[in-house]
Length: 111
Image (cartoon, rainbow, N blue to C red):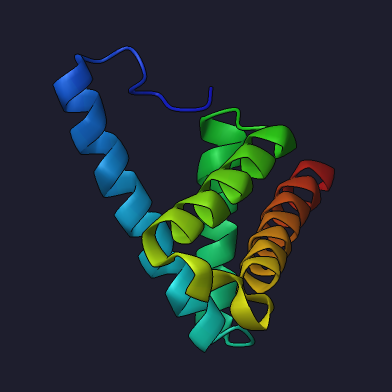
């Protein structure tokens, strides 16, 4: 299930989607700033559990989100976003977070 609120009224959907996107970007920022901390590891595990187990999110959903996030930055920031490989870096960060979330999910299934 990509978004549990996808069948909501369009106005409610947009409100929930905006909130989700803001939360996602704040979380990515936290993870980038403090990548190797225990707090970040716990946060990734929590997010992975929520998305992969409770919401039945699958890896291709994260690829869509990565693409959408990078495209959103391109649109909001413009050409500046393409300088210094920013779009590649954000794609890599998103990929690392996805890999870690999936790893936690796979580890918990093995137990």
